Length: 107
Image (cartoon, rainbow, N blue to C red):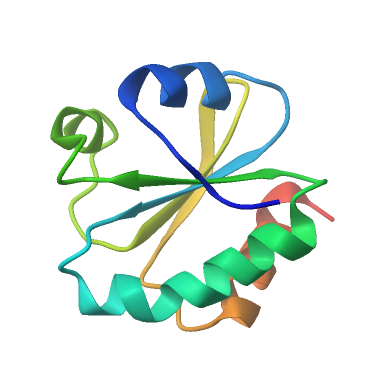
């Protein structure tokens, strides 16, 4: 399953679900965002059944970034039932993202 690109309204609806949602807050001008992007997309393909993967372009949704207090990108935030369960800033690798998910979801 491919990562979804979210607007404000889609974000509210999707993160309110009981299924976990990992949101990547990013921007096209961010070199590190572009570098970690393929690893994030690969995880979306591999784990898309267990949780939803989504992206928010902070240039297109600046109010959402402010609302979620995103100060550094890329920032990944894991949501479930409308609540942020945890976040990580500038993940080093696909393995680090997987580790974060396992720790945060308690698997």
